[in-house]
Length: 414
Image (tube, rainbow, N blue to C red; front, side, top):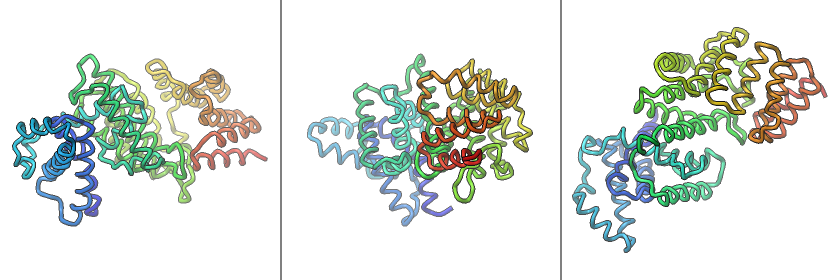
């Protein structure tokens, strides 16, 4: 591992801890988060050359505190608050950090920060952006590149998100017990969105973004460490590991997509598969059943088949029937229809798929046409399948998916 890579990984790990420490000490989440970003940038420039300091977390807290103090001094309206903060924190603390053990608990801060970034006052895109920056330690430029938008656009989105949190009166504290389960559900959804955008990029020339899937797995692994008894957290981590294990086999050297049925399974990440299967097996045996656990169980059935033709589709069908009852959604029905087709025949799958035709949530989504085309091809209706492949290709904004769908249509004739 290069020195720069080691520094980058360490900074991502420390980012939420340092942000939590500053917010807990000074308040003002928006100003603290900006100060931490400046400290992270300074470290990313200095540490690869000068070496990682003995107490890197304390170094970041000191530098970020200085940046924050400079901001406060520059605003006369905040002078009284600065004096109060200075009276509460010894002046020399901003010069020479004490041992990391003297700082607030990192575990609590990371979890609290996740809940804050996924505040219900924010839209899902804003929750994702703020989570990647404040908890993931990514710069605004890195977040912007991840979602293929200009840096200025992403900077505005993050700034508005922080202002909404401030306007909502959100405090840097764990939500009350009555709200905690719902807020955790939002946190998991945000992490799932980050992973999905990395695994199947919604637009652009690349099919997948390993930086985003890796960050989603890292954050979910941290959440699992903080909440080891939560079945859905374990289920989401298992789902990510089992899905990401296929990444080496999902594309050809030219970047074109390889569907699941045609992948060389010897190229799947065996370590990730083993970890994912163990996680989902353990949580299914001990925790209340939830949608992420069921999706992970489906991924595990796929992972345990040595060849595509060995897949236990009957077991997958049962799991999808359970998932439809636990967490119904058009995407679940879409995948359920494929399982029905594999067990009961393509016409049965098409009948289930027809129930989605009037669902506005899938209006214009390329996956409905893509699945219908696949099932029509299995049923032997080549002409109809070709038209739906073409319709799906027109609807997607992902270039690799577009090329794949067009190639499927071309195989079925002019």
